[in-house]
Length: 334
Image (cartoon, rainbow, N blue to C red; front, side, top):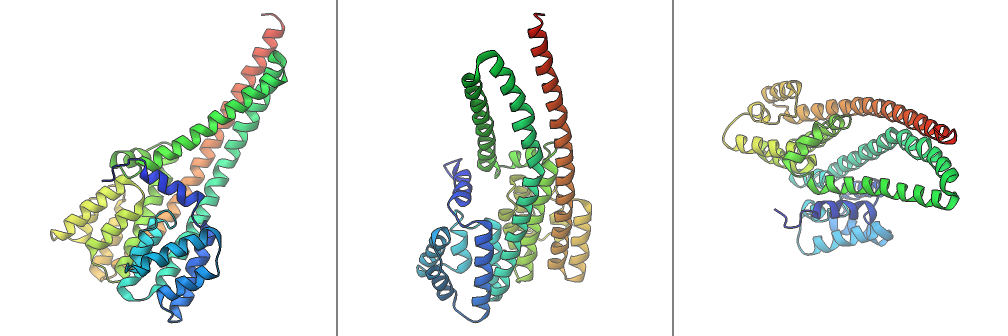
C-alpha cells in the first residue's frame, strides 16, 4: 500500500492539469493504432509521434519512449505513466500484448477516451444549471442586500470570499474523493450516496466490464481478467469484490459463482455471464454488461441532474424570499 495516502489524488490532478487532455489522448491512440496496424514497431511509432508533437503530448510520448528503451512492454510503459494515461486506458492497451494486435487495443483505448469525453460533457451539462443558480440566483441578491447595508466595497469582498470558499470546498471534496476512492469503505459510501451514487456505481462497473471483456477477448484467463477489471474500476468497493472473485476463480469456482462476490452487479449481469460461460462467449457477455451499465449510467445521471436542479431551485427561491423579507422588515424597523 502506498505510504502517501494522497498520492492517487496528486496523480489524478497532474493528469488533468499537466498530462495530455482527452482529445489529445484520443487522437494519439488513433494515430498509434494506424502506425502499429501498418507494421511499424511500437518504439518507432512512439518516437515518430513525439517528433511531430509538442507540449504535454510530447512530454508524455518522450516518457513512453524512455520506458520502452529500458525494456518495459508497451502495456507496462503506459501503466507506469498514470500522470499521463488513465488506468483503464493502460489496461486496454496491455490487452494487445496477448494477441499482438496493438492496433485493435489502441482503438479500444481511443473509444474509451471518447466515452470519457462524452461523459465529461454530460456531467458538465448536468451541473451547469445548478452552478448558475448558486452563482447568480443567490450571490446577486446577496450582493445587492450587502451593498445597501455595508457599501459596495465590503459587499464585493464578501461575495468574492464566498465564491473562493465555495470553490475551495469543491476542489477539496474532489481531492478527498480521489485520495480515498481506492478504499472499499469509501467506494461503498460513494456508490450509495444520494443523487450521484448511482451513476458513480454504474460508471465503475462499466469500466471494469470493458477491461474484463478486452482481456478475455485477448485470451487472458478469468482470474487475470477480474484483476485487471479491479484496477480499472476506479472504485475501492468494486475493486475489492473483483479481487475476491479473482481469488475464487483461482480456487476453482466458476465465473458465475465468482462474480456473485461483486455485490454492485445486479442479477442480470450474473445471468449474462452464466450464459456466456455456458456458450464459451464470456468476452461478449462482459461487453454486453458494459453496454448495459453505460445505459444505466446515462439514465441515472439524467435523474440526478433533474433532482439536483429541483432542489437547488427550491433552495434558491426560499433564500431569495428570506433575503427580501429580511430587507423589507429591516427597512420598516420591525
